[in-house]
Each structure stands twice: as structure tokens, then as C-alpha cells.
Amino acid sequence: MSDATPTPDVTDVLDATGAGDRVIAGGTLRILFYALGSLFAVGSTAFVSRHLGIQAFDGFVTVLSLTAVALLVTDFGLAALGVREYVARSGEDRDHVMGVLVALRLSLMVVATLAMVVFALLSGFSSTLLVGTVVAGVGLIVQAVPATYSLPLAATLRLGWVGAIDFIRQAVQALVLMALVLVGAGTVPLLGSLVPAGVVSLIVAAAVARSLAPLWPRWDWREMGRLLRMALSYAIGTSIGAIYAYVAQIVTHLATTEYESGLFALSFRVFSVIIAVAIIAVGSAYPVLTRAAGNDASRFGYAGTRLYEGIVLIGVLAGVGVGVASPAIIEVLGGPAFRDAVDVARLHAAAIPGSFAVAAGSFLLLATRQHKTLLWINVSILLVSIALTAVAASTWGATGSAAAMVVTEYTLAFAFFVAIRRQSSGIGFGLRPLLSLLTAVAAAVIVAALLSALAGGIAWSVAWSLAACAVFTLVALSTGGVPPEIIGLVRARLGRPAA
Image 1: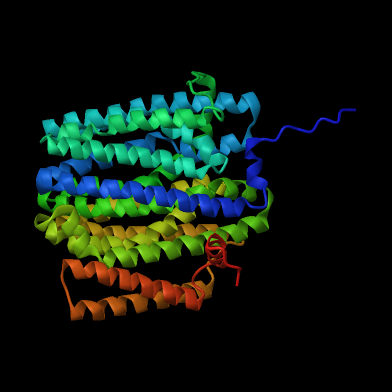
Image 2: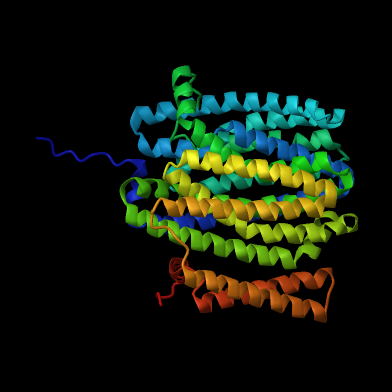
């Protein structure tokens, strides 16, 4: 009889008592890293928009959106699937599948680049944008590997490193963009900033994750095919749900003038930065949700409800802040030439809470393996989004496209919530938190409107945005809109006893 104790597995942290606290703390750290990276992104956007002007900036953002669509579609949902496979496997089996995932992602990114070029040709892109599409595709291929190395870090709740790697990528790209603007570079070199950002993040990710996953691709074609078959409905469903916001930018570019599309592009850059916070926050909880969905229904229901309440709270707060501060945001990013984008930004701000709810709903459906449900809902909404955006953009320009996005975000969020509730998983959204959020939003909007009537202008909009966010937070805290887990964690970090 052996007295040897089993060797702990790195994924045992998912079952530990403090896993939830690690998710909240790690997710918060990821968001902070992302916020820092976003400051670089905002700074580089201000440089690029002023340097290129409205029409050329429209083309620049359209190619970036096409790159995002290609990444999300051909990624086949391998990020979430990779985390799930890492959690479910161990030893050499785990190492093998991670190496196969590296090879698979590289292969898919090459396919993605070719598809981008074909789309650009068929859509009649200018020669400049066509070359820029090729260059951006190279950056897409380079960034595939560090993204795979982040999977084991996420699966073992080393979320700070996941955030740090993404921050490094954002910061390097932003610094390269600003340097290129200073030397007067055009659209093609600016799109090439994806390449050095990918190389640097690859070096860092490989150094950090080397003990958790193999560093070299394994070209096991049978295993690659098995993963693709396993991921097909799962992946298509998640990819479509993620791409339709970027598709809206591309449809707007094709359906309206370069001026209107340029206005939408600047506002959309702000929107896309904000909604990534939801994906980061919910994605941080995904390993725990996956484990709970498989073996603890009550824990999953409790965690899912709190996730919904917490993520929507953050989304509403972000929407209030961005909506009130829209004049200042547009002035900083684009200057007087983009002033007509303020109303577009306000509409995008109204869509932010819906986007946050969409992020929560999609990951909860993934955790319960409702892949076909995801597929049908997302395909339906994508088709509606394309048609609605095309009509609205051709009729009302940028504001029409943004209004179409508001409709599709909330429609998708509602559809996801209904699908989750039908599973009887115990997940819901309490009446008290809902009423609290509505009350807090009303109070914040009234305060912002009164203050704006007293003093308007670019500078004042920032002050009024901060005041509106403060009012929202105070009302939400006092009326039960903030989940107690968040309050308890904040108190613990401040060294105060729980209430």
C-alpha cells in the first residue's frame, strides 16, 4: 500500500473555496490592465483620426473591423473551447491538445487572411485598403500564438498575467501607431502596427506560460479535425454573436458616404473599447462557470445570477459615463472635424448595457453547452442586424447605424436571457436590482441634464459625467443594486470588516 499523495493539478484552484474571490479580483485586475491599454488606444486613435481625416480614418477602421471579424469567425471559438479542454484534461494529453490548438489557430489565421483579401476584392476596396488588408492579415497570423498561450493562464485563474499580456499588445500597437503618425505614415503602415504588437506579446506570453503549455505547434491533423468537428456549432454560434457589431461598421462603410461612415467609425472605436471590458470580466469567470455547470447546479445558478447583476451594473455605469461625456470624448479623439459624431456616440452609449448583458448570456449558454441555441439566436440576429443597419445607414447615415445597433444589442440580450431561463438553471435577475438600476439611471440622467443646463461645453461634459456616475453609484448602493459579493470584496481590499 502506497502512502504517496497525488500530485496537485494546476486546475485544482478552480475547486478551491476562494475561487470566486480570485475570479473577481483577477477579473478586476484584467479590467485595470485593459483600462491602461485603452488609454494608449485612445491616445493613438486621437493621433490617427487627426492625421488621416474622416474619409481615410473610415477606411482604416473598416479594415480593422474586417480583421476583427476574420479573427472571430476563423478562431472557431477556440479560446473558450481551449479553456474548457485545458480544464478537462491533464498530463501529456493536455500538453498535446494545447500544441494542436497552436497549430490549428495558425492554420485558421492563414485562411482568415486569404478570406479578408477575397472580401476586399469583391467589395471594391481601393488599392490602398486592399494592401492594408493584406498587411493587417499578417498581423492577425502573428497574434494567433500569444492568444493561445493565454488559455492555460485563464484556465488556472492567473488572470493578472492574461491582462498584462493584452496590455502589452495594446500599448505596443498604440506606441507604434503614434510613432508612425509623427513620421507622416499612411494607412498601410498604420495597419502594419498589428505585427510588432503581436511579436512582443508573443515573447512575453511564451515566457510566462512555458510551464503550463507546450511552446511549439503539433500538427496532428486527426486531432485538429476532431477539435473542429467538436467545436463547429459551438464555435459558429459564439463567433457570429461576437462579430455582428464589427459587421455593422463594414455595412455602414458600404451603405453610406465616407463622411457618415467616418463619424460612425470614430464612435464605434469608443464602443468597441468599452464592450471589451464585458468580455474580459465575464471571460474571467468562465472556467469557474464551466466547472460548476458540470457538477454543481445550485452553485452555477447562484454564480450566474450574480454575474448577470454585476455585469449589467457595470454596463449601465459605463453607458451613463460615456453618454454624458460624449462631447468631450469626440473632441479629444477627433477634434472639430468629427463634432457631428456626438449624437452617434450617445446612441452607442445607450447600447452598452445591452452589450454587457449579451456577454453574460453568451458565456452562460456556453458553460451549459447550449451551442445550437447560440447558433440559431446569433444567426437570426446577425441577419436582422445586417438588413437593419443597411437600411438605417443608407437613410439616416451614422446615427441610423448606431440606432440599429441599439435595437440589435437589446434584442440579442433578451433572447439570451430567455434561452437561459428556459433551461431552469436557477439563473435570473432579481426585481430589486433591476428597480435599483432603473432608479439610479433616472437619477443620474436628471442630474446630468440639470447640470448641463447650468453650463455646457466640452470641458464641463467631463465634470457632469463624473457627477452623473457618482449619483448612479450612490443610488445603486443605497437601493440594493450592487451585488453583496462586490461590496464585500471592496471592503476586504480596503481592510474593513463586512457589513
